[in-house]
Length: 320
Ligand SMILES: [Zn+2]
Image 1 (spheres, rainbow, N blue to C red):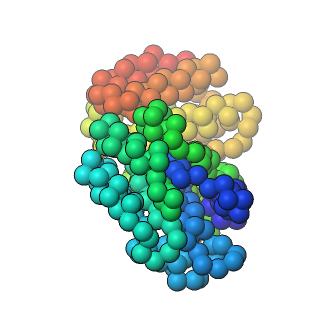
Image 2 (cartoon, helix red, strand yellow):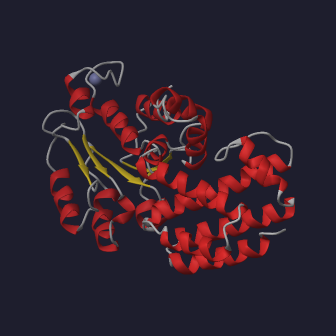
């Protein structure tokens, strides 16, 4: 099964019915395959064979190599600005160099400021016949309503967790099943995100989280726990991952407490030891506390403040 196959087949059938829109918003989480989808669609539009996209004709190959003269990919490194919008508008009115279509793929479309989006409106509304736009975004609601209303949306839901886990197992045979399971749970059905999480940082955060849980349930005094957490500050994404893993660890403990022998972060043995030390209600309270902290860090909350509050709340649950 290829990435986002359902959505790709739908696009092909639109093409076959002559019902392709002149502008699409391709929405989905980071790493879900938005560019991959746009390149697929572009090769359907450009392919010179009957069975589109063939993937092997010169047109398809140029698209897949991102080297087609009639396909622009913008906004990848940094968001498009007004000058880019003007370049697009000027180019869109020229006839295609090589094929029958002209494709503009705009990554991070929601990062375009209002002025740039407004500049794009006119061309999105009435583009020349050969032109098709693909606006890629993680957050469609961040685009101006006027832009949204001119585009058809393709929402990429991502892969099933079981599919992601299968791919990761094959690709990363040396990673532990625990790590792979946790990454799968955290990746929001995005294989790209999963692979990113598997990077070096995530292993460090995995260790940091299990150390934290071990200290929390162990003899470490409150003050030392506090100091080690505050000293552990990393960049925001890592802190978020750390908290997600702590959350996963408490969830493991709660499952064990409820008689379900399945763990994502901790080993079943460790989780069982911890589960004996606390009531279900108290574990649930910890989960809620960590969830709140995770959300606060995600919303750019101050690390020290968020962690202090979390530790105070966890501290009061420590002996329950
Ligand atoms: Zn082809």
